[in-house]
Image (spheres, rainbow, N blue to C red):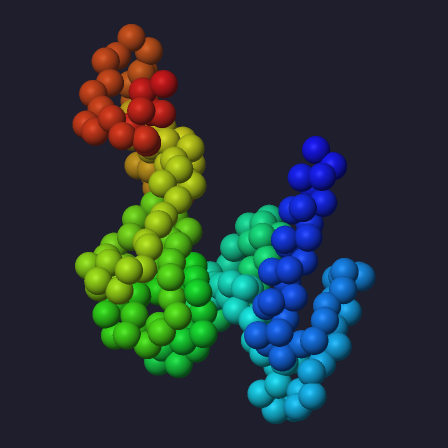
Length: 219
């Protein structure tokens, strides 16, 4: 086991040395506090296209850049950053503002007011994935994204509990005629007998569409 581990380590160091030579770096040592110890080959420059710049470009290429156009909860932002993503915000941009900013980003997270059409995707040179922070994707041109190999995903369960609860609230409100009774009270009237409503107890509820929300309403 020890011999195999040593052999694997030697092979790893050989690959590292080969890659360093390709970048113009003569030798690299173990990282300390996140930094490797490297010695430049002759001709290396900190300002020109030398090994340090090449190494920096390679490191930046490994960091995924995400552009967000809506206010997300902090937990979601923290999760993206924990996975090594750089997260930038452009809240409620115009179409021109978004088209002018999108080019360097790998990912885009949008809300329903952000239209992602073919024109925007043409400007998104580096885009690989679009996330809709919600259920519907009506604001995203799925066909245009697919043609460019861009993944489109949503969060289908993000608000189903709230939607099911809201459905029940409207159901009870309609059965008890609460809107009409409220309007009557605001008009200074007291028509209690007109707004007795109906009890739901013992009634049969018809649900058209047993998807995620309908299923929760049924439960």
